[in-house]
Image (cartoon, rainbow, N blue to C red; front, side, top):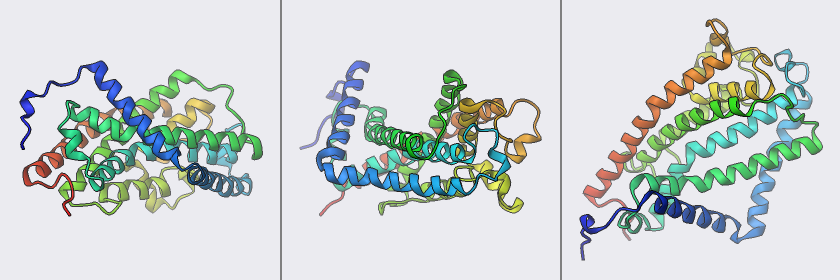
Length: 297
């Protein structure tokens, strides 16, 4: 029996928020249903913390990070924490969509009054909540065991001014990645957009080591992804606008490196968010047209 979509009344804004909250509770319930498994996954975060904190202990001679109160330890742990949050924003739409695809829930959700933006937010936001928990584990563990110095001169408003356009830019890329589920049949847990962005951001965006120590021939890659400007800007918001030497290209531009980071992120978000939404929507519409929204056994 077919469903007349025109007869379904869309949810109001408040009802959309309530529906998204249902998605969040569902994701948290699934994450914590098997408590031992979830605690084990958090231990994986602790393992990362130990590895990079120990690397940081032996990297104290790097003069690039001396502007930070805790030196290279603060550099690595803030990079790890911020990249965890940005990675969740990047992968959330894809992971939520592919999970719904394999569980045959997409058509049921899309037949509901929930609008497509609410559907995407609901699929993604639980991953961000989990990432916030991981960030808390990283920062608390770094403070307790590895002499991570909590920034005392951080500016929360400046931090948000960097974080909001950074998340918008990365979510735009994440939407494009989710669109690949149907446009390129990328249903094996990875897609070209995620692979390219994560590879570049992990290696050359200044997450674990300063961009200045990279070979000059590969430094240009860091300017292709928003993570470079997000991590640099958020570190400056936390530790001071001049706590770090700016990335090489930014150092040659007039104006404050922090302001340049924010402006680039705003421009990136203005381009990536609508483009990513267009790719995602086209993928969904193509799948609706040819009957590939859910898998068929």
